[in-house]
Amino acid sequence: MKNLHLLLIAVILFSCNNESYFHQGLKKYREGYFEDAVELLSREIEINPSNENAYYERGNSKYALNDFYGALQDLNKAIEFNPHPAFLNNRSSINSRLGNYKKAIKDASKAIENKQDYLEAYLNRAGAYAMLNENENAIIDYTKTLNLASNNIAALLGRGIAYQKLNNLEKACEDWRVAADLGETNSMSFFKNYCK
Image 1 (cartoon, rainbow, N blue to C red):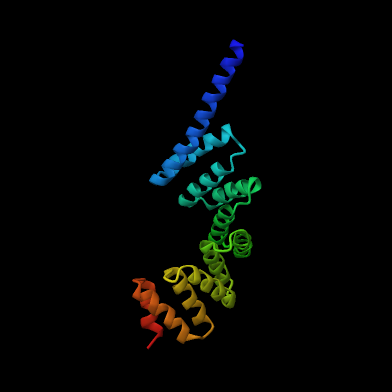
Image 2 (cartoon, rainbow, N blue to C red):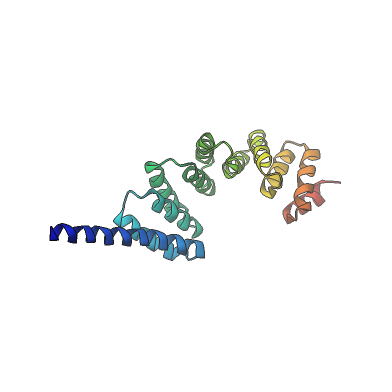
């Protein structure tokens, strides 16, 4: 009985330490200490290799350190355990940064399937479409983003650029004017250069 009691104490201490690494890693991430976060979350993964949230957060930390390939590996692992919309959306962002726009679109689409009002996923997918010069699709997703958040500066700027590429300067200028009124400096430059 005494051995069972000691075993239970050891399991509890092990679990607390395990949870501690994860929470400490999250704290470091939120404080902007990304290298420390990676180290702590790696310890968590050593102890609990099936913790999808540890892979996700370590991937976010690696992304913040511009380690996009490392971030992609961690998001792939997290998605193996759980294809959560946030995991898919973040992998979409990483794939865009790596120039894998078709993969970015696929992941953002899966995220949207599971969460219809996922503003960030619409924005990520729109950006990937824009990079592939699929401007009509980009406009559709930028518009969906704006339906969810009418003052989203990135969507206004992106949709304006997509309209410009389709030679619709009237609509482009309208979006850039609204974004410029919201204080977006790139939109002010576009407006001054292309709009009367």
